[in-house]
Length: 268
Image (cartoon, rainbow, N blue to C red; front, side, top):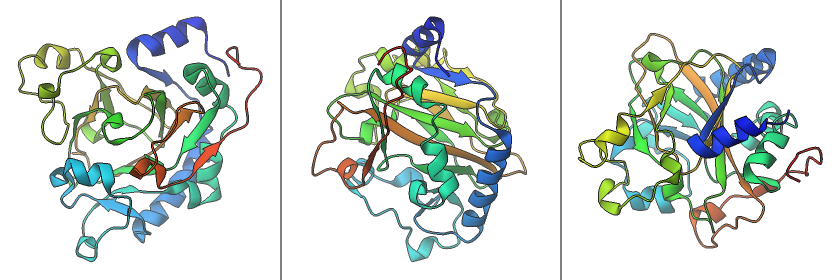
């Protein structure tokens, strides 16, 4: 698949793009089955809901050990981490050839998977999950520039009540001031200067196989899951090959996976 000029322009303008019915539904179902098994047995490394909102900026920026603590054993799982190396189906999706020319167009560079960030099965447990506040993913990542995007795969239906992603279009292009964020670098919803921007948020619904690609600086959030059904999604992050990791940071603690160039991309 190759993006049209209109689609590419839309991504650069809005900071996100939705590819409807992109992934094979049977493959999504197989990924979902494996994810549920790992969740059932809480196979490490995982992140739980316990204390998630209380974690400091320093913790989120510096800590690279993703294993949960013994006291968290009964807490609801928020995500399965490091999924690239968990199962061949997870690895295959992250290396999917079909989406590579799209990512090359957006990055205007060779695609490199960064396993340090996202690389996760994301969950919203029914009635146990917490909301995800407005934030930019890039705030805790340490790279030479901002040419990173995330790929979100809906493994089943996603909508407002179970925590679908919401975005503020164009926010990846805005140069914000530090006072617009709190001490943990969440976008302050009560701040007068932020309120008009938050009112521009967009929310949609996703179905199994839909993919959302979004920029590392795009403001996004999600509600907690108030339904009776578990919501599971798959997210990973890629960067351009010319975007360099800053050594000595958490971003450099895990390997990068360069993917072969897809020569039919318009941009390469």
